[in-house]
Structures are given as C-alpha cells and as structure tokens.
Image 1 (cartoon, one colour):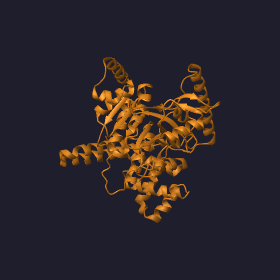
Image 2 (cartoon, one colour; image 1 turned 60 degrees about the vertical axis):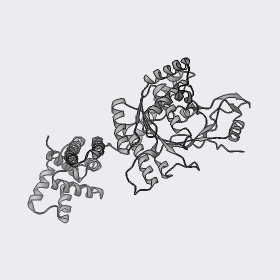
Image 3 (cartoon, rainbow, N blue to C red; image 1 turned 30 degrees about the horizontal axis):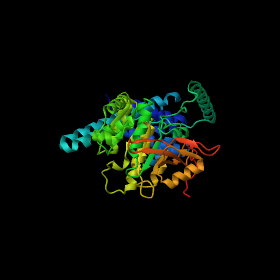
Image 4 (tube, rainbow, N blue to C red; image 1 turned 90 degrees about the horizontal axis):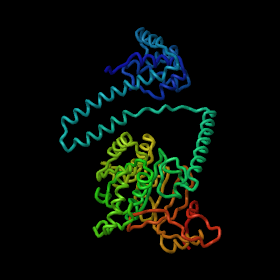
Length: 466
C-alpha cells in the first residue's frame, strides 16, 4: 500500500480555495501533519490562517499572503500553487477527499508505530514486553477511532428531532403499558437494580458515567453485583464487571448468596443442607445463562481497562461496565497528587462511555466525612453521583415518621448527590442484607398515616435527624 496520496491533498487544497464550506470541513478534520508534501502542508497552514481571519483563501489571496510570509518564492512556487488550484472539485465531494487524506495520514502513523514497537520489542526484556503490548494496543485502538463529523444544526432540525423523539417515546410508553399495565417502568437504558432509581433515571443510559461511593465495608461490591443481577441475570443485557480487589473464588461464592438468598457465611463454611445445595445449584444455573462477563485484575491500569472495554464491546456488545473500584487502579506516576490521578481516571471513563456508547458505573471510596476520596473536581465529569450510607435507628424513625410508613427492613440510604438528567438531592431507603450480600430498595409493610407518601418520596428532600 502506498503511504502518500498527493492527488487527494491537492484536491482538498483546491476546494479550500473555492469554497467556504470546504475550508470549514478541512480545517475541522485535518492539520499540517496529515499532508506528506511540505509545500501542501504550508499551503494548508496558510489557508487556515487566512480563513480564521474571515477571508476566503483564494489563489489571489494565497499569492498575496504567500509572498509576505515567504511561502511563494519565484515562479516555481507560483506555478505549483496555480496547479493546485486547477484540481478543483465539486463542494459535495469534499468529505470524500478529506477522508482519503486523513486515512493516508493514519496509515503512515500506523507504519511509524509498527516500526517503533518492533524496535522496542527487539531490545526489551521479558518483564517489559506486556507493558509494550498494552501501550501498542491502546495506541492502535485510538488511531482506529473515526473522527466525529460535527456540524451546526438548524433550529428546524432540532425541532423536528425533538418532536419525533417525543412521538416515539409516547408510542413506546403506550405499547409498554398495554403489554405490562402493572409492570416496571419503560427504560431508556439498562436497569439500575433499584426501582425508584429506575423511575428517576429511566435506567443507566449509553454515554452515562455514574459514581457510586461508600466507605470501606459498606456495600460497594454488593451494590455492584446486585446491579449486575438486575442487568445481566434478570434483564439478559451484557455487563463487563472489572474487579480489582476480590479473587475469582470470592466473587463466585458471593453469587451463591446473592442469587439463592442463603447466608454467605454458611456457603463459605460449607455448612449447608442438601435442600440448600439444590437451591444454590439452581442459582448458579441462572448465572450460567446470564450475560455476566467478569474480569479480575488486581493490577488494573487505565490502558488495560480501555483495552478490556473495547474488547467487550466488540465481542459481547456490553451495555454496562462496572469498575470495582477506581482507588485500586495503578497509574505509574508518583509525581502527581491523588486528586489529579483520580480526576484523569474518571474523565477517561466518561470518554470511554461516550466513545463506546455504553454506561459506566465506577465505584469510589468515601472519606470519613462522606466526601469522595481524592477530590471534588471529579464530580464535573459525572452524570450521576450516588452514595450508599448507613443510617441509625434514630434516622430510621425520622424517615418513617415523615413518610407515614413502616419499612420491613431498612439500614441504609442511597443519596442522589448529582443527576445531570433528572431529579437530585434526596435519598432512597435501602436494605443491605450483609448475611446474603443482597442490596435492595426498602419495602413498605405498613402505612400508618392516611395519604402517606410513596416509599421513595424522600427523593428531593433532606433527611434530617430530630
């Protein structure tokens, strides 16, 4: 394969001399490094400079500016510029030629990468080989991404899109209600595992980044696995679960409790009855038929995670990635402060969610004061921040008194600290059964006040102690 395409370069530059639209398209996608011919790169750079000044880079303007900047020197460069202008193409074809220039540029980058990594591997020791392979994988994957074709929309386009979406949602809602009049709400994404959170979010949607914070030993992994249960087991939607703390055996045993309801300590010790064994076997049969795809990686790095995510998207078409948890990711940069590292990792998760069009749930550690470990700055990149917080008997009484209800079991609350796409500021009553590692929304067993609010009416209100 040839590494250059001078004709495409000339056609792009010629189009820029004749069309404002061609200028905008080329400048948005290309830069000087995409041109192999030095003169072509200089013409492109000058054309961009002129265009930014709100002047179309016609051949006359390029000659004038070229003489001032030294680009045009003598008859030879004037003839080259004139020859380029004669490669004029129809404006409608600019995307085709810009794409050809960009593709050749990526081919050249790929050729350079192959040479670079070949040389690295020839001199590397075995211990470095894996890191080199991971770096290469990440670099090649980045190179393969298609550039976004961004544009300015007309108001009519936005109005038409909005109306059509409303009609689609209305029709889908009515169909759903007809088929499931008493069923769960219609979701735009995958279920959260908490009914009230489903109502508020309409599910975790493609491109969403959700942070779940909890203190050590207060249910981060249990919450994550119960989310997997809702998505991969009950809803049969593929989930990639990346675990950095627990072993494969520990995760496998937890599933026995979560899906069977049998105490985790009994399963761990082996002190179960034959009837319970049958119950546990049925639970694992459900897991076997699910779309739960775990990866246990104690030394997880951002590059490894991105590689895993792309692989899972291509091979399994995953709709949700769960990272358990972000504090254990290795960064190999001791010079930076913790908040800088966490901010970079969280931002990378958001980009990953958007590029792969999936939801990403990231587990984080909470400090003793309830703040997110690392930094407040990471909140800006999140679509939702959830906190799983234990509550004492006094607070339970206060919640029940305000809502006029009695809960069957309640010992935690799920605070919605941020929700970019809906209601935030309140909390949902939660039952975390530590014996079975099950996390669920607390259920109302009795209404003690006429007209009492629903079991998730705490949303949007502060939960205060007496």
